[in-house]
Image 1 (cartoon, helix red, strand yellow):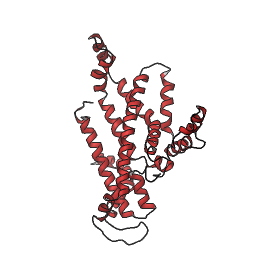
Image 2 (cartoon, one colour; image 1 turned 90 degrees about the vertical axis):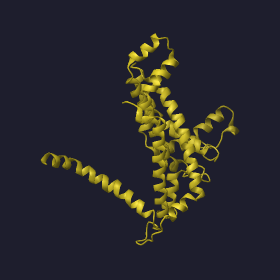
Image 3 (cartoon, one colour; image 1 turned 45 degrees about the vertical axis):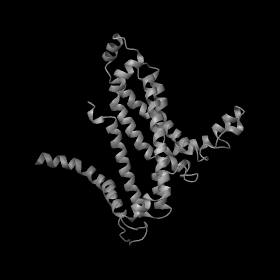
Image 4 (tube, one colour; image 1 turned 30 degrees about the vertical axis):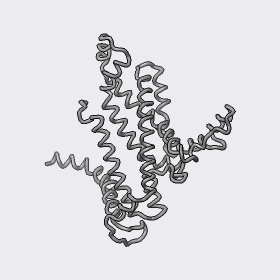
Length: 290
């Protein structure tokens, strides 16, 4: 009993903090999702499932969901491929690889707001770096409005997300590559396997746990890119970069519809959990032996 009590004493402070800062707000948000609370009034009425129906039938929510899926697909595809390619190039123990790894990892330590402000300047159609590059090449009129054109704005922001986090995912892949026994690759080479054959039959199957982490984490990141999109576009132009988190924010702090915002948050949680579960099932993470 004394041993158990001492263990609980160590656990209790962290457990209390978690309960106060995470569990209680989550349960409170779930409760308010069934009310018409505006976030300010001391009173509210229970509305049942009305908020959920309103959110699901909202054209802005449907647009935000579609934008989120586009953003996720672009980020997961590009970031996974680029981080894997960089990891394959820099997984060795050469001394020159250390500064290169640090260089590619550097954007990950920047705050997302800083990244958004930097790239807003890069994309600026008047004085931006990309505009200057087009001017230098004599193609002044060909430069698109990267975050002002609703057809490409979501992909322009996705490119920034990839730039900021590819180095971070590269480290995960490098850790996985360095855990693969060299003897397996040597045996495959002796059997006549080329580089592609060794990668497909030896390296990639043993990288499956790392790939699962990268894809799942990248998916969650892409759905929680609120600060990047809020800094760069605030969901514009014409909701072209609106994602679910910015939609929830605008409901709560622009329209003061906290009940609907809470319902949107609950739906967002269910969607994210379902996508993560499907990814793990697709990658057969539960069958991988760590």
